[in-house]
Image 1 (cartoon, rainbow, N blue to C red):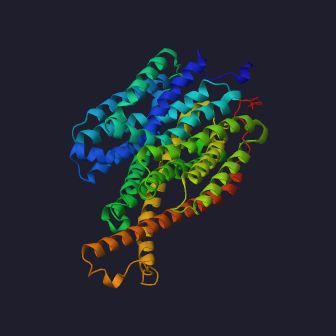
Image 2 (cartoon, helix red, strand yellow):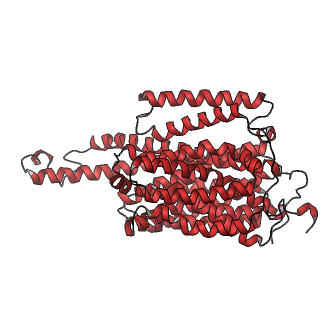
Image 3 (cartoon, rainbow, N blue to C red):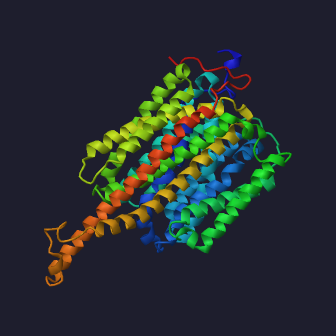
Amino acid sequence: MSTTDAPTLAVRHRGLLMVAVMGASIIQFLDSTIANVAIPHMQTSLGATLESVTWVLTSFIIASAVATPITGWLADRIGSRNLFLIAVSGFIIASMLCGIAVNLPEMVAFRILQGIFAAFIGPLSQAIMLDINPPSQHARAMAIWGMGVMIAPISGPMIGGWLTENYSWRWVFYINLPIGIVTLAVLWWLLPSRPVTRRPLDYTGYILFALGLASLQLMLDRGHSEDWFSSPEIIAEAFIAIGALWMFAIHLATARNPLFSPALVRNRNFITALCFMALMGIVLIALAALLPPMLQNLFGYPVFDTGLLMAPRGVGVLVSMYIASRLIARTGPRLLVASGFAITALTLWRMTAWSLEMGWEEMAITGFAQGLGMGLCFMPLNVIAFATVSPRDRTDGAGLLNLFRSVGASAGISLLTTLLARNIQTSHADLGAHITATTVPAVDLSAAERLGEYGAGALYALDATINRQAAMIAYLNDFWILAILTALFVPLVLLAREPKPAPGNPPPPSLD
């Protein structure tokens, strides 16, 4: 191997170390969705109300958002090895504490702790995969890392549902322990470290950025339950988020030692990748949160079968990531990103024709094709982002990419959930206006009251049918929005240049 194609950090047993890094990544990304299906069980066990139990999810999201921006600074300050070991061990301990929590305040406190450590694992794992592989293998490394990032959130609801039904909701946290302990042992043995750099922390920038992110995430997470801008709380959070992030942008442009390297902010390819990563969060994670309730409530599939129907999406991701890693040296990353988002947009358009009468085959085929599209663009996006980023800025860059994907997911879930609820009401009213004696000849509406409980039962069944149809129409409207949004992003890939490696990093050769 030539010196120009040498990894940033030399390691022994690179393959084993990559498996360990992936193990840490998987439990962290899995935890972003695995707890969602266990919330109703937690509510009963922890003695929480329907509104207060949502803090189990909100606290994790906000803690991760606040901690992510200082990942690069901490890695330089105490060493990337030390920070990663602390993050993984802390995440394991926090998971165990979440599993033994006996009331809601304990659970929220432990989830905050878990969210802080999780914030460091994602960016560091991505930076480590790049550091321990030579530039010629970066595409393959990102494909491997991306498999965990893409598949873990998709499989989370299935695994969480199975553990909750067959054991207890506490096992959605305990499952992290056996994987985490083995991973930690291998990391302790093999993980190298970058040199420690005593760079100063931009306290003003960090406080502004953290305050803006925390307010934004809180607004997105609680907006639906608080009826958005009808609530003084949401209005206050919106003003704080806009004000803090605006001041941070000005500070970033004028500060002598800003929170993030000016080279990152001026990097056209990196900024383009950030925008696409936010869209990836909307399409991947928000859609993964939207589909399970639809499959369970409208189509009547049990939790585990719902997970099985989501599995083809993960298989498609695996297949296309392998294909992308083989093609990127020949086609360049921009073509793959455009193709991936185009395929995803087409599958979302196909989903707008779904109906309550269709079988599982259509869901499986569409899900597999959608996975192909998502997997085809994820790894090339990372190549576009990091090919022109210097090694010293990788951790900060990885932190921002993970952060934008998380914010995109939060925004997508909030937007789609709100539109879903409002469209259900609108569609129910529209459908109800067409219920007459001629449109429902099987039910004598005028005689329903005289038939007592039988008439009430008939009206209840009729209303349930209208509710199902209204909900299906609302889901289709959400699919339309996602399809249009994804299609509009396809030509924006032209904003990125075909990446030319940073000094000292040769272009990747063919992966054959």
